[in-house]
Image 1 (tube, rainbow, N blue to C red):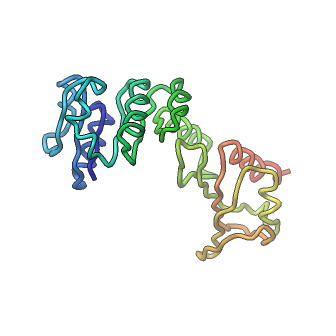
Image 2: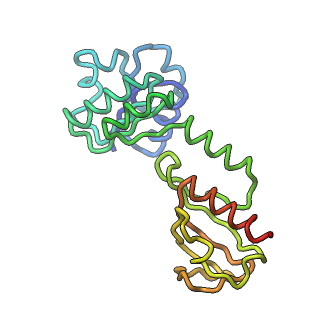
Length: 219
């Protein structure tokens, strides 16, 4: 795969290095020559110094042959414009944008871009961990708007159904594992203590599930 990485800070240099180590052709673009010092000594890709929107810079980076572009500079507006240009003017099939400041995320979303926001995702993951490990996130989609969670049925829900547990909550059952054997869950299946349940849920949904699972039945 031929990939252009725009921005050679901590994220861009690590991304470029990881892709290069896996055999991809990588070109890194940055306006500051010293930024390329962030790249490990054994990086085997190309570097292009210049303002990415200046005439000829994307051409020098090989935008016409690019299979993917990652805009990961610390300027959210620049990332949005470069990514939009790569997708609409050059038809680059895989375009990903880093969101640096969550306040700029609506602008990037307005372009319909694939966004990775380390600040938003990181804050949500830390919040989840602070609550403890009763319900664990095992897969995150997007920036954590929807995740797959895993939890174990406590004795207070023995004999109740999955339908009762998830009623009117933004959770979709994915799998039920009992005695080491997984199955597609049915809403009317009686739950047993130590059943392991996986659900797809929003943050609001998993919060409602946590309250119901560990508080309502305690009374």
